[in-house]
Amino acid sequence: MEIQQWREFLIPYEQAVQELVIKFQNIIREYTSLGQYSPIEQVNGRVKKISSILEKVDKKNMELSDVEERIEDIAGVRIICQFVEDIGTVVDLIRGRQDMEIIAEINYVAHKKASGYRSYHIIVKYPVQTVFGRRIVKAEIQIRTLAMNFWATIEHSLRYKYQGGLPQDVQDRLQKAAEAAYHIDREMSSIRSEIIDAQEAFKEKSNLVGDI
Ligand code: 0O2
Image (cartoon, rainbow, N blue to C red; front, side, top):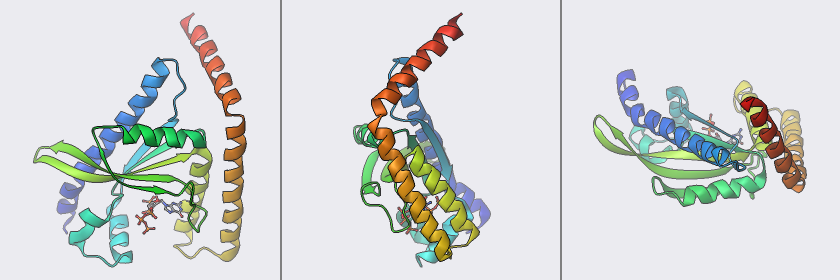
């Protein structure tokens, strides 16, 4: 495919990512304006780079014509939560929506990957309106805690550095770090209500100071 064809191909995915990020940010805004705790801490989105799409085509030994059907994370949205319990709340919020259709859910929180990776993945079909008409694209929504995200970000950059061939000692240390991240999540969950109360009190105090 020529670069121009790739650009055209990616337009609906770019639109989907922009819209989805705004929609999830609006959820944060809604909770905040109601003075309630938001199960979503941050939202990021990205469209997969052409080079990464081509790498995946190669890795999965597929035809370019299969990209749309088989690569489900060209549009990617990442939702970061403070606590593991929030992941379930966000999953339920997504299940209840009318503007996207869930086609798959993969629970790497309960069943971590061999690498140590933990996150909840939801693949949705999402309709966008382009100048060429209505298009339905797939998007991958990754939902994870701050601790899971910390681990995944570091592991991803190491994997990139070593181009897939992580030395055994690095793999071992990453496994230990994954365990540590899991324990942080468990500890934080055990004092969740105290943390939420403290954050609400802090927010109220900042609002009062802001009002003056
Ligand atoms: P990027 O750069 O984030 O886009 P696979 O067959 O395993 O290559 P598949 O079938 O698309 O991938 O599904 P999977 O395994 O659920 O992975 C989808 C995405 O989840 C990955 O996209 C990563 O973002 C994330 N992910 C999955 N496993 C790991 C892991 O072990 N470590 C980290 N850091 N992230 C992971 P990409 O395209 O691999 O990467």
